Image (cartoon, rainbow, N blue to C red; front, side):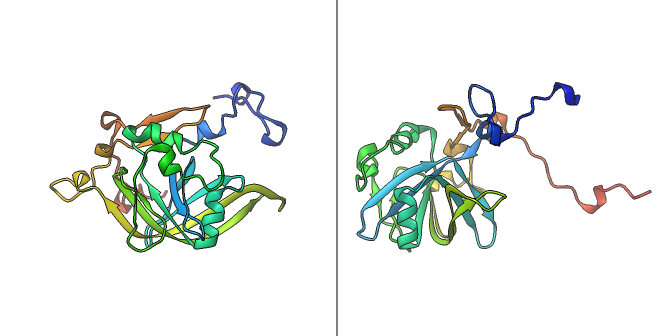
Length: 216
């Protein structure tokens, strides 16, 4: 594409489009469906569209909250949270937990979901979700701009200390069957999501040194 054909904008000046394309370009993204408790043990459950995995050993996941919310207050107070896999069957319930509920209102009850005790942390898991990560907070901090100015977004990383997988998602060859869980991902827009379709999957293996042509 020639440079003249590119649509160029500087985020500080606005994008000039009907909807900010940033979170559609960086997508689809796994949903950070985060359950937590406050210091009094009151439950909270909320989805975050900026979520992903960041390390293998130990496994570390992270999510960002635009604005100070109950989840951030909870994880900073207790040092724990649980991630729950959002699936196609749970899409409506997941969406309900994004409602602007009053502080202290239980989103598990609001969405008709079942809280179940975790094994190592105080935050509950979503029973209906086929995969849960129990996490201990490693870092939780406010983001800044390149100029060092504070941004109204908080980033939280957590080490996964326990993993729960519905046995129906473990294949006979002892491999986790990711598509069978029918996970959904956030794809920007006002309410765009995508479900994983096994027919869209393909494999590409990382090249080895033998695949690198000799230097001239």
